[in-house]
Amino acid sequence: MKVTLIDSMGSDLFVVNAARVSFHKESKYIIANNNNTYENIDWVLSDSDVKLITYLAKHNHWSPFAHCFLSFRVKAPIFVARQLVKHQVGLTWNEVSRRYVDEEPEYWFPNKWRGRPTNGMKQGSSDVEFKDHELATVDQLIEDLNTTYLLLCSKGLAPEQARMILPQNMMTEWIWSGSLMAFARICKLRLDPHAQAETREIAEFFDKECSQIFPVSWKALMEN
View 1 (cartoon, rainbow, N blue to C red):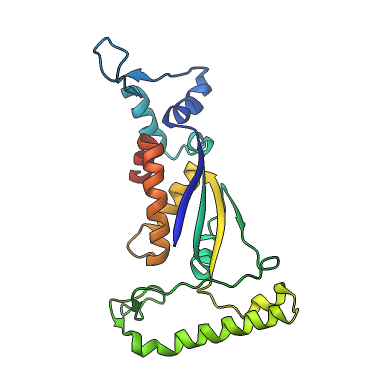
View 2 (view 1 turned 60 degrees about the vertical axis):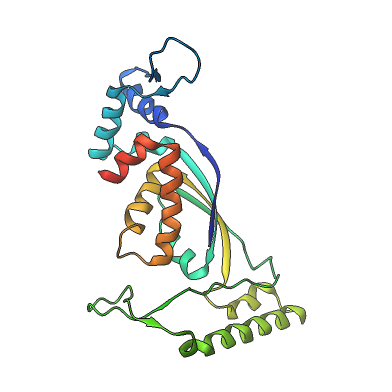
């Protein structure tokens, strides 16, 4: 699986000013060091602006955070994509379509096959690990499906129908754009230890990128 940051818009200061405009006010960065030189100047938020961001996040004033945007290109198996696409609010999703594409698919296999949950829950998995030899038929099944798919396409069957036999571990790619607030909601849910490991791996990348681009806002959103 792979996640790539394509673009971003906004900053912590953008969040601050989206809130302060309500009072017809505007903040600016201040100089962190005071050495009276223009070399190695660090521009930072004032203490009052940091406190404002914390207040906004704590009291669920979400709109200032919704003015900042990020776009990612994500590569993951179908079953992971279908879990993540449930997040809709504040997000836009465009995905590779096998109505138009009939090139040979790529497939994803886990490093470790996990057992059923043992705590009475219907979702999740346990620490029980299955060995490769116990799942040997899986590789053969995927190979057979892949061969059949390519054969159907070569015979002239419409790709939009041929794709119906492809398994959920087939890789797909999509561009996912949305507000800082929307990605914070994704991460707060998908970084939970009870979330599926594969979706958590995607969320960990979002968490890393968002914390670097919007350090003050992201910290406030994830802690409140």
